[in-house]
Length: 373
Image 1: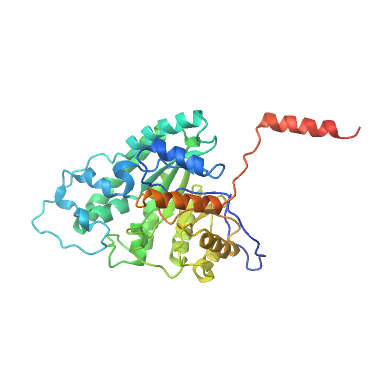
Image 2: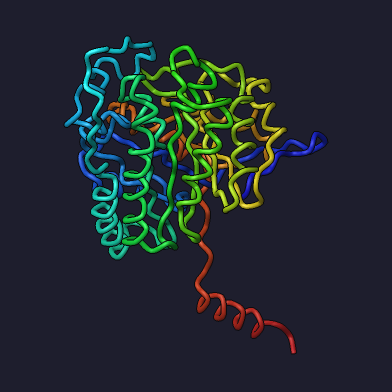
């Protein structure tokens, strides 16, 4: 499925999405539980499936504090992560930065083994790819470290994360893998610069696109790639409520124009109270690659009718799109997750799988045999 902006004279018809996208995190205890639950909830609706970012990974990049555990002087306090305020530099702090492996590759490779097992058992459908959701280095640096260490630590962390990505791609076949880059701090830099400190030389947008281009280039041909553009989910609130999708459309266009390889999806959030055309209207200005699909994070718990309303309001602006939640499910209680899954299922229509070649041949032969001589 490919998304394209609709022309202004397109006729509006009732649109039912076929594709559910899972952003990443969950409150589930194990990846097995997550895989089984999502596969049951969304038959013929998933193109990729993450492992749920179970355990210590459920709160986005907070667990990456341990990567810099040997350099505690550069870390924000646990309570400071996500408060989006400036922090004073400690003039007496050591300047040395030590870093351990990120660990993203270990989790991905172990989860992929379970993914393959469940696929062999028929739990996960054939053709669904294993999705690895990775934060861009900017998110770990900006959210976990003190500002005076941003510039020095970023290239170190980027090198470590790309090393983990290399190992993931060496262990998982390209045609079985999808990489999603999670972008929250970058959006904060553009929307709330007073709280999301920039250490870039030059314009913020240029710095973001330069870094995303490097990350995209590190993803092998044949591996699907997508971007989750995020406004945060602390207490189920965004760090800023944007007027419309204008900023996100701008960054999507910039990335689409700069990245040479295929981009398979962009995910954008849609707040629960936005059922107005004004929020979606910037989608008319999208400049997407031919194969790129838009994922609208417009599904909200206890709001089937509102979700359907948001789908219909958005549909005049795109030829088609997948749907999702605004963010990952890691900060949601299990009861709420069950409700959200039900909303997503009710608001979508399953993609009926193509028959196998043998079935198609038999069907063709049967039809031909019924034709008059």
